[in-house]
Amino acid sequence: MKFRQIALGVALAATMGMSSLASATEFTQDEKLWLGMKIYERAAGRGCGTCHDVKPFPDLTESVKKLSKDEFIKVVKEGRAGTIMTPMAPQIMKIGLVEKACMTEEQALDALHGYLLALANGEVKGKVKKPKSLKEKMKGCQ
Image 1 (cartoon, rainbow, N blue to C red):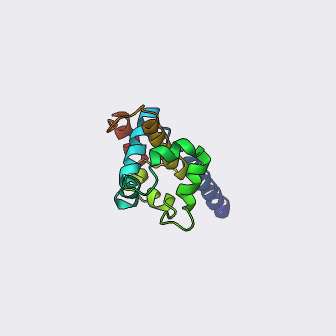
Image 2: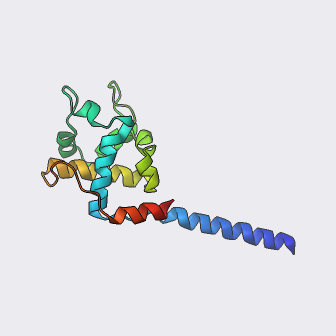
Image 3: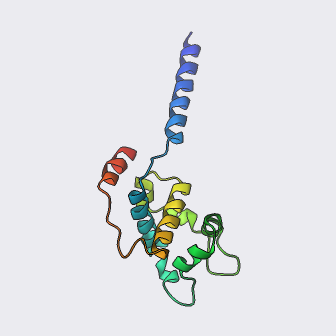
């Protein structure tokens, strides 16, 4: 009898844990833009612009127009052989904000791509204002 109760408890705990992992936080477009901007500013500790805002390195607002989203994400994940561009996805996932927002790697890279594309298309100029809705989402994530 005890074995059945323990087995049932383990099964319930596993099921509950899996459901919480499967349900990632959903973000609005404004939230994604702000998160993408922060990822750009904070990746690798000093931000993507440390290299990419300096010649001769590629300007990411130009690269994001030339590469498909999948190609862009592949470069961020794998880096570029023969260059100083190393895989950045692991660094992005260590950003405190990404962790606090409980973002998946896919969400974080999507937010970064979306922010750069919005910059490239002139939809965003300068800083993006933090949506108030994010505070509650990040509090509920922890």
